[in-house]
Image 1 (cartoon, rainbow over the protein chains, first blue to last red):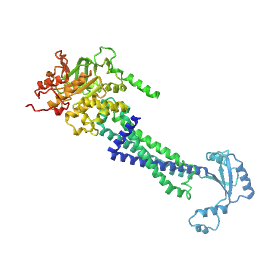
Image 2 (image 1 turned 45 degrees about the horizontal axis):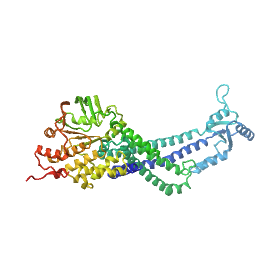
Image 3 (image 1 turned 30 degrees about the vertical axis):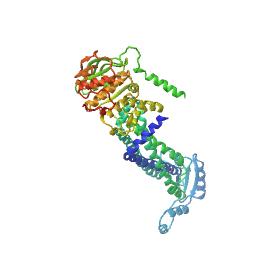
Image 4 (image 1 turned 90 degrees about the vertical axis):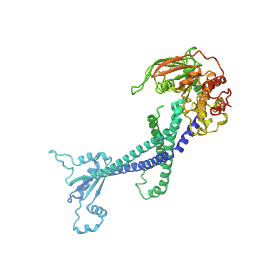
Length: 300
Length: 286
């Protein structure tokens, strides 16, 4: 027990004497942890979003305008009977026009048209996004000549929304990459700054280290105070960052989450677990930083 | 607390290397020791010597003759390039990294530049040596004042090193080296920075420690003083032993007699009594 207090005492004595580099290391740790704390939920949200988009993937089967009601009903029954099809909904010509009107900024442009150019369509939803292609081939099986035919003469074309999904994934992917690089750089920076703090501490206490070696202190006895010093930096940095994150959550995120679905994405990590992970990693990074430095600069 | 007793037992085992295993093994034994530094500089060449328990040895020679290298070999700061260094019969060249601290706990070291911690007072400087080897509070409270009394610094417990004279600082450093009562004490130029009068006080203190049964090795380049002290002298020159006088010429004498004789030889004051303070020894001879 007296040893333990000796280590703690030595570590804090060193922190006081090395105030400037210690503060620099703490600040970097704070920034890193805050970034990580923002990043993890953002990551999960984008992940959730792209999954959501994927689940909204569907096939649009466009029909010729001359399709009769009987033909249409027959096709609907056929489509619904295909394997992996979850649901089939009919969008009539006027409905299609209405949907388009809703999307346009200036609906009046459509009034210029004297007839409705939009085709009627079936929206076919798969039970799994990966099955999209197999449903597509079921609707347009390859004919004897190898060219795709259709299961019904009223089908004009079959389209899917894969391209849209691809774009969204591209954007979220780029976002993830940038954030990951940024975090990695900051983790490295805080590792090095913690290491630097320890190195300075070793330097200012080289006389102590020398004496300890001469009188026969064991290797770990010499190292512990430095190790504790580094971990204390991570501890302080982590604690401050978590405080900032908590304040941010209460004042900014919580009020917003009522109005924005993105912020309140259902599948993000719970705040408690997030804190635990962040705190753990802050302490781990600082321990690692001091450990590496001790190995390099304190050959005892 | 089973863990505690286990640890104590382990400690006792680890402390073993330097305790006598075979009754008559010399405490220091060098056999054909050669040390070549990485740059190719030959610091010691085929040095052989043996020192028995309780001896007082002067190691002399000009700067660069390998004295400090020898000391570093003894505390396993360096390993010999060739040959073996034995402490109490055990080859320390083959000592594992983990055992080195145990070796050093049994060897007190004193240096020319004292190596005191400037931000700790006299008491804490000496206590530090016990703290870092994991000694208990009771042990520290018992041994530190006792040792400081031995070196004559009982009244300066709360002074900081910069408030002490050179001689007093060296006494603190000797106290630190001796507080653990090691069987061997190495002093590398202990009086190198001190004036002759203070030096005698330091030598007298080392002699007093020697008389408690501790083997003492003093490195110095002051051949003149050494010649007059009538103790065993080993002289190194360019890495070789050029003189080894196991001077049988000296008999048991008290530290006071020693001090008197030294003063007479060196021609610095003739009183026999000392008050134990290096710088306080200077008296005007009416």
